[in-house]
Image (spheres, rainbow, N blue to C red):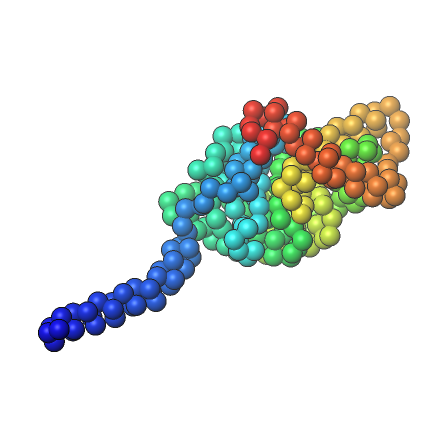
Length: 273
């Protein structure tokens, strides 16, 4: 074998090994910069959740839902800034916990995405977050009258629904949660609970699965509607702590949760994935 051939072969091997060594770093760089989302059932389900929440009038032109990134717990996935009823799989974006977008297309994100990042940061048990402005909730955020679970399907909202007022810490604002400091203050008010109201604004819902978050957000609105109706004719009787605990376990059991999810998917015209 000639010396030239040996040199060529040696250079080829070195180059090949060099490419192999660099490949993982290149992949990491691509991921860090925001590679397109893979087609995963969790992401398709997130797109469907937007449509469900819109169909049930939990959200309208505004509001958003996210999931913790199944590939990196310090990141989360949510849509670009778009009305939930219009959200498709292609609208989904990966975010850092502090709200930095990793979208390769650099599309406009929701301004209040800090709500989601702050809750994920504080609550390792939470895998899905919803922010909405359901109108039936608002009277309970501005009157001092407490929203309580009053019907068994609403046990999923939990026994306590705290109220957060952005003005308490941040004085006069446009009422939107635009910074991580504001998001963390809201997350602290939410505490270990499933739901919290935001004075003159709306609500947040946090749960251990996307399905649970969606069902809780729907029945939070339903519960508020029923409590408002009941208050017009008398004094509502809330569920006891034991009733909330037992009924919540039933509503979030696989049989009941999957049945409700299939129903709400059908109403929204999306596949029951």
